[in-house]
Length: 393
Ligand SMILES: *[C@@H]1O[C@H](CO)[C@@H](O)[C@H](O)[C@H]1NC(C)=O
Ligand SMILES: *[C@@H]1O[C@H](CO)[C@@H](O)[C@H](O)[C@H]1NC(C)=O
Ligand SMILES: *[C@@H]1O[C@H](CO)[C@@H](O)[C@H](O)[C@H]1NC(C)=O
Ligand SMILES: *[C@@H]1O[C@H](CO)[C@@H](O)[C@H](O)[C@H]1NC(C)=O
Ligand SMILES: *[C@@H]1O[C@H](CO)[C@@H](O)[C@H](O)[C@H]1NC(C)=O
Ligand SMILES: *[C@@H]1O[C@H](CO)[C@@H](O)[C@H](O)[C@H]1NC(C)=O
Ligand SMILES: *[C@@H]1O[C@H](CO)[C@@H](O)[C@H](O)[C@H]1NC(C)=O
Ligand SMILES: *[C@@H]1O[C@H](CO)[C@@H](O)[C@H](O)[C@H]1NC(C)=O
Ligand SMILES: CC(=O)N[C@H]1CO[C@H](CO)[C@@H](O)[C@@H]1O
Image (tube, rainbow, N blue to C red; front, side, top):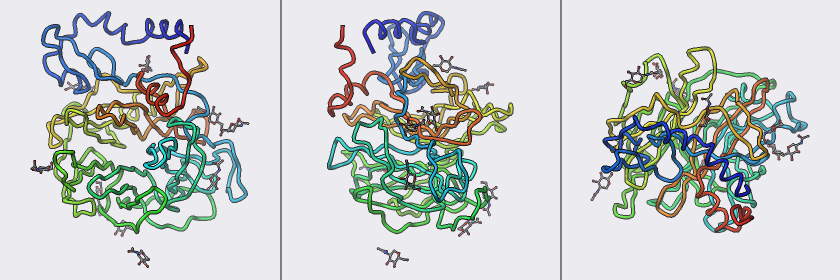
């Protein structure tokens, strides 16, 4: 981006529009700033953390996406495909930096086998590892199948207590039918561990008849506990003394802010630099109106993981519109499975938003990686990637 483009972007960006019209907005507590910023006692205005914007710091500071980054191999057909048009469709997952090679990035995602696309996710989903040597945004290329059909919605966290990666997912071994179709069965959450992302241990079943896991270790530098939190559908949080369980249900937020007939799914849980807790969720308010969007990304937050939780039902963290660096923008049919990749400097600055996306009138889906704020540029430069964006005249 040239300086003039940066300036015009800044001038046109919603941050200034909101600030300009935010005289009425007055915060009293950090909760009024979504716990992604602090409320200045002198001005009663929010000071947002890097990566967040808007008067109440409720929006992710999303930046344009470069085309063909992320993992998009929807335009291929292979000999074992049952149909054409969906390619290697995928549906989101985690970016992980290699522990031994800082220039190597892994993307652990759900990918549908036999070209079956998102509509055949159960039982056709597998868990794969893709690699990028060109930086965290990719483009990523297929490297390895980690779990065959049916394994889906992998979430990967590093557990400092065990010095292992933990992968939680739904599914179990399931032989695939010989045509693309969708089969309904109950979901269950299992875990596997790995020292290096390439070799994974035998699978342990943790929770039956529960879906969409998001784990977070309670370990801190000052408290080297092995205790684990495991969030699931409905933002219910289970707790265990160690990652292998047994897990007990400890927090059921419910939400006064959303009509019980509205649902959210795909929770992604994290603890911020202040020790406060957050979820990004797939907000399903438009489903009631017979649509998949555009209001798809909600933010939920609490000082303590046991609550009280606040569900922001007014302003969204993100929606289905994505701007690209070529100046075009796409309104996606579906944008779900939110995950964030954070800075490793202790600030927990969100650097990338990862989603499963599907375009209108397409059976294909892919994994989109959208940069956030300004810090991601610095991060990429420190690893030797990216252009020196602001130095050109
Ligand atoms: C297919 O996708 C690859 C990226 O995965 C891209 O480089 C290529 O241009 C695409 N081909 C067509 C015909 O769109
Ligand atoms: C993803 O791939 C499809 C082709 O299968 C292409 O039409 C689409 O523009 C690509 N999207 C991005 C963001 O690269
Ligand atoms: C597509 O996925 C298959 C595994 O099902 C893999 O062998 C192949 O390399 C992948 N191709 C691309 C272009 O992603
Ligand atoms: C993993 O499972 C296989 C098959 O059930 C078994 O033979 C093997 O001993 C197990 N490995 C470990 C480390 O538990
Ligand atoms: C499975 O979970 C669903 C939704 O939480 C619940 O309605 C149903 O009763 C459960 N079934 C069993 C067999 O536990
Ligand atoms: C360490 O953290 C765990 C989990 O949050 C907590 O239960 C425990 O009391 C803490 N221990 C100390 C010494 O603070
Ligand atoms: C948002 O939550 C408030 C309660 O905090 C409620 O009064 C309002 O109706 C909700 N709005 C929507 C759109 O659900
Ligand atoms: C989606 O978010 C962008 C960026 O915040 C905003 O400019 C746009 O108006 C939103 N679109 C919809 C349909 O809400
Ligand atoms: C509640 C329920 O039906 N659970 C089943 C879900 O599927 C697994 C794997 O097939 C079974 O072991 C559970 O009994």
